[in-house]
Length: 115
Length: 111
Picture 1 (cartoon, chains in turn yellow, blue):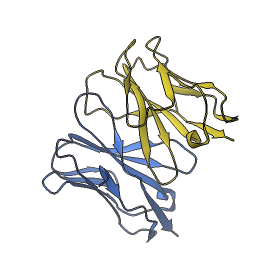
Picture 2: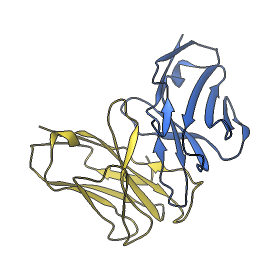
Picture 3: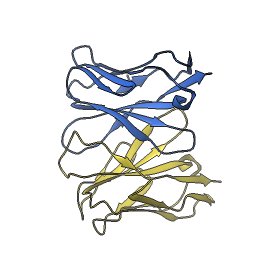
């Protein structure tokens, strides 16, 4: 998807390992979001950032940390990976910082498996 | 009760038919409603948004919103095999832009 780039696209980890998922956008959007998608459960919000330097918890934040160091980048960190965190992770952005009627633009996703 | 509920399907329709996808929600304060299409192994793609009661048409797609009854639906006319995908209903409330998704309905359009 043009504008929202996620890296890596695939990753296999062992239980207890740590890693950071990267998301970068070049659309000058203010708000960024991290979701996870598990089979049959739709997307669930992990963390979001309304603007540079601010972050807030979503529905399923346990086991994750985030960092919004600048407007372009929003990273998601797993400090000690667990098999329950096996999922597809999507980053998304919205143009405004205080909006309720803007659609979100999604990256291509990171497919993460934890053994 | 889930905040956003969809029938997971699969919903199977013949090519050329109308596909009707439904979504109910529990939060009466929800303000914005979205339909995303997701092909297998791909990311969600926005196809419709609706904010006020009534119908909104865009090509072969019509979104319908009824806030009193707390449901939103998506009609796909002249369904094509390329419409076969999972359709995700999502809504937002407040001013954070956070989306709450349903589990998605899988649509199969058979030639």
